[in-house]
Length: 166
Image 1 (cartoon, one colour):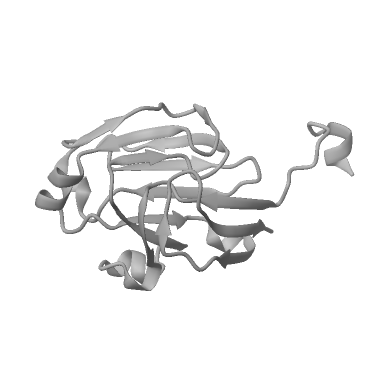
Image 2: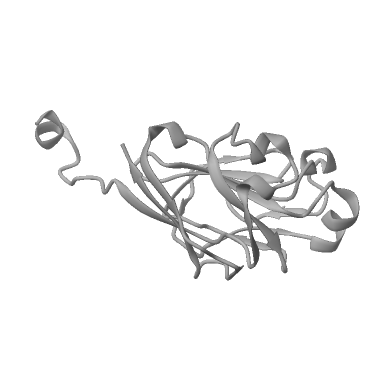
């Protein structure tokens, strides 16, 4: 009731769709070769083995966090969903080399908007793996998460996850 009286006047949709942020091959979260991601310590999600070096927004929302090492971007949807797009594994050690950020914290993004570019070959040769986790970092605040059966995914086009926030 108070939301209707004092809120923005519109109900925030609890349902959200998460699209592929990178073109490549879908990887089940349990198969990501890193225990932090595979054991869902950071939250539910999936991985993508990229075939090209561009990342687009998988959701409509705001850029919440651009990591100084440029290897990851945090996004937040209007309904509270928090998403981490992490390029490769152990890429924090590259200290930004091979990455080009295209957005700033606070920017509003739509599905498909470019977020960053990365040098796929450089990461393949200098990091533990190119598999890129996409993690719902506040999975504990969701009512349901349904991951669609995906194989080859296309950035900004392939819907991978349906989430309902609590």
